[in-house]
Image 1 (cartoon, rainbow, N blue to C red):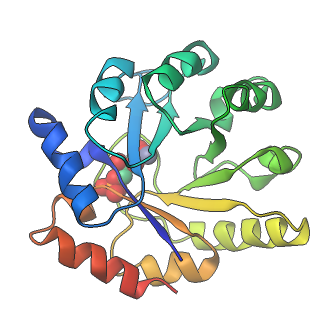
Image 2 (spheres, protein in one colour):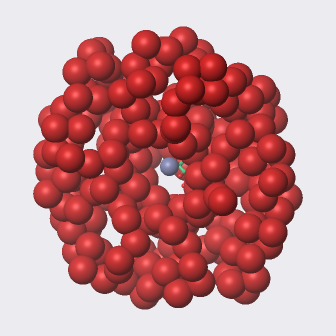
Length: 217
Ligand code: DX5
Ligand code: ZN
């Protein structure tokens, strides 16, 4: 069974509460919240006050993707705001093991995100400590980019690493996920799908969500 995590980056920011309700009503599983700081990535999005204001509007767990420098400084604020899962980028963490323990000390789930060019060896020795690995299938910073096909092998290799270590870990994919590549990424081993533009910009959101679930392998 796959989990679908719509990214609110593609939502109408002037109507966020309604947008969140809309994705919840069509049966999405998690709310993916993209936090960008203008340093780690070129774009700036939102911070803890907006996350907190959305928390009372939905029962969906909050999957907070931190595309920021020095994430340790803000982890506590995002937990207070309602994060249920926090992803940090390995490229932004000088002491990744410590940062993962920091997230877990709040009793929430910890995940590490890898940019397309970052090797899986970055997380090899912390895999046991993680709940999820986020394989970026575009370079982070913007919604609406095209899926990078070379990431399929990376997903497969990661699923192999996880199976070899007999771990139970989610693999999330993020960037350019559409109904027509859901079959490929799930076959490769991904089970948590982030989709921004595919869900929010669709004419019939319910039909798109159904199509994504139908196409998953
Ligand atoms: C990219 C973000 C993604 C993005 C996905 O930096 O992490 O979550 O919003 O958007 P789509 O699905 O439109 O590629
Ligand atoms: Zn994201």
